[in-house]
Image 1 (cartoon, one colour):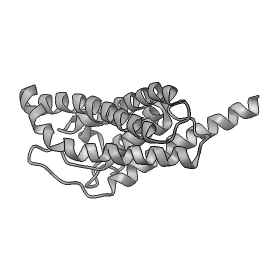
Image 2 (tube, one colour; image 1 turned 180 degrees about the vertical axis):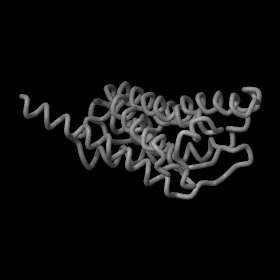
Image 3 (spheres, rainbow, N blue to C red; image 1 turned 90 degrees about the horizontal axis):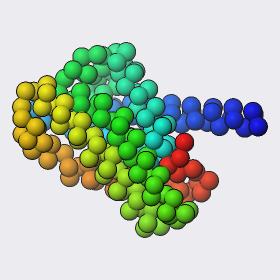
Image 4 (tube, rainbow, N blue to C red; image 1 turned 120 degrees about the horizontal axis):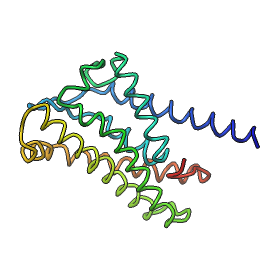
Length: 196
């Protein structure tokens, strides 16, 4: 029993480290800068994947580990950014929102996965897409809009309007994540989807 518990714990730590590393890899892909200081990056896809595939707790820990590395000065954000200064800039709300976005993706996926009962078809695809939209868009944007409004001293409504440009790209990321989740579930039926 102890051996199984240790093995599960080691596997869990490995997954957390793997997804934190995946976030770093996504950070190597060049960003697209927008006039109001919030760039378009691929790292929000990493948030969606961590939440949907690792579940809420491990997804949160994977993103938190990544952000800790950023805070320690590692240049893991697009454009080689890192250090404490990024946590007080225009993107600060998004960075904090990533952790809670992963939790929301994981919780939504967990709730929907119970209803799927091992399905790997269109139902799983739709559930993963919805989970990504809830966590990766609704929750992350909520933090991002508040952060941008506070840092840039602009009304919440104006900050929210500025975020509309991100929605088409993030919906594409939701679709990509949903296809990855479906592929993982087909290829690895033993994967404990949405659970810690």
